[in-house]
Length: 121
Image (spheres, helix red, strand yellow):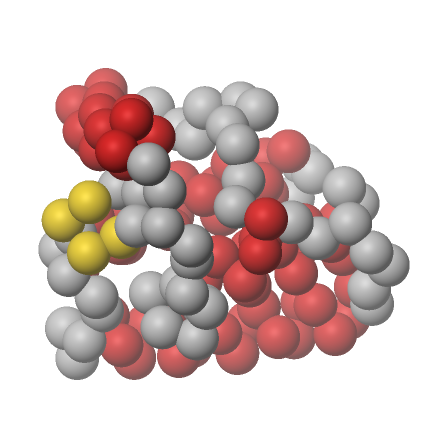
């Protein structure tokens, strides 16, 4: 993944709580692992585990424009922040289970931080 693909990927991930992307259902074992991972990240304030599997819809393995990906991510962040402030984010995540606004904020921050650090940004 290059920097443009990373920005595009982060944009896609932020579209989940905006309900623009719907993820496929997963089996209960993966869901249990996701719920435990979410709790572990909150307790230990650690980041996204390295090599954590990614939903197929969120994989960006094609060329894309850095400028366009950056601009789209910034727009999506604005929409996300608006939804966060209005407390209109979903109450459930297909992998992480029950979600509150603070859960969405924490996980989205950790995800962005993970990838921005990956590219030393």
